[in-house]
Image 1 (tube, helix red, strand yellow):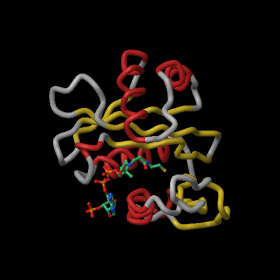
Image 2 (tube, protein in one colour):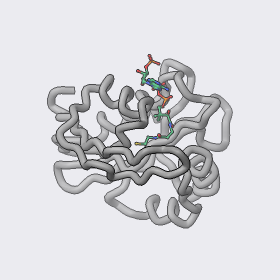
Image 3 (spheres, helix red, strand yellow):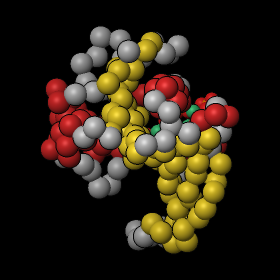
Image 4 (cartoon, protein in one colour):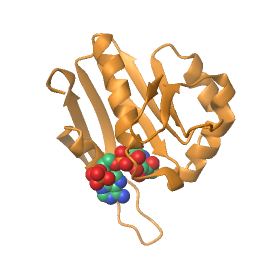
Length: 160
Ligand SMILES: CC(C)(COP(=O)(O)OP(=O)(O)OC[C@H]1O[C@@H](n2cnc3c(N)ncnc32)[C@H](O)[C@@H]1OP(=O)(O)O)[C@@H](O)C(=O)NCCC(=O)NCCS
């Protein structure tokens, strides 16, 4: 458990949180994950699922899902509830995960992000992630949106 400067608490999530996580995920992404998807993540030993809670809150205001395989890890998903954004929670969750991953011997943290997702790209760049590759037109367009490139980003935890 870690208390962030903004008053939110970061802690590991469990089966008791899967319904709140599904609601949060649906509010942030067009293709939402269901509670049973989160139940699988909670029980998967390669996955780390962290949540941020507002003081006294019972449902997570944000979550981060990371998968570790030996000395590498990947950010699978991160979402902060709309009314909780721009308060340092995204940074706080990544920071807490990076400390835990470093302690368990992880050297590199990878992720893939929609190049048009300005908030996420800025968050990762601010934390020191570097663009190491690009997949052209990886995310389909539609509804007036052009297809977006996927950026592959990496953070070397020794440098963090
Ligand atoms: C991306 C996301 C996780 C950021 O979470 P957050 O808690 O609001 O981010 P933080 O408050 O920790 O922001 C840290 C820094 O990231 C950058 N940032 C965050 N949101 C931003 C925005 N909307 N526009 C530009 N930069 C932004 C800023 O540099 C910010 O620092 P600052 O507030 O001091 O300027 C959040 O916007 C979100 O949940 N988006 C929807 C889901 C999503 O797109 N997930 C990423 C999938 S890869």
